[in-house]
Length: 328
Ligand code: SF4
Picture (tube, helix red, strand yellow):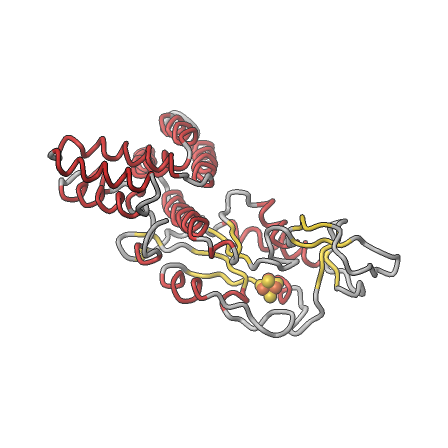
């Protein structure tokens, strides 16, 4: 079982993330260099613990080393075709799966035939001596190590460094990672039905914003707590919860969730304050204000009115605030 995730500011857990080592600045790339990513090393590092993984170094290739490429038949070979590392990489992935299973996410280096998640060039196997004409047959490949890990651990949030430069994709990934850490914390000890009920209660608005179907499904599972085998119930809830949060919340679903939150606080507010919040939700709806504006207003009123159920909603505080100046 995993250890509970230690807190990081305002009660947020401290997620544990696997990461392609080169993204943290380790000189492990094929040319002896690195691909340090400032968001990871300077911002996210303050709130998470890293588990660096360089699959090519771990199978003993060293740095510098010959560049690798993916073939359309699924093999991972050196560019000149002189060595095939498919079996070694497959063995490494199988060994690493138990370690990665207990983590809350994985940040992978894009465009790597070992770590990349999408759109990798793949080459036809070419002539019998392993050479080809140098042009990719397609760009539908996934790095071999990443592919094996993601197939074995479909619930593990995984994203590439390049995509994390998009504010919306970045926010979604960070939100999933912190939710995953809270889930790990919940299930890391002997949980009781009331722990699950409390956990689910805190995540209702967040689930609603991401996937109304998943919101209802998780609710049905929680209603069976105490009446079903705990291990089966845990597995079902884990699957439904992670699948719901894997759906990206769009503007319409955020507006729906914001209106639900407003419904809880509305009776405590006078007409002017209600109008202010409605105006902030509308401004977000039209793209004139970031999500952080109505969220900040609702959180302020939930805390000010002492509405514990509402102020504990993870939707209003899904991750440490300093990770984003404004939520997109
Ligand atoms: S992309 Fe992956 S295999 Fe390549 S240097 Fe980085 S961690 Fe190592």
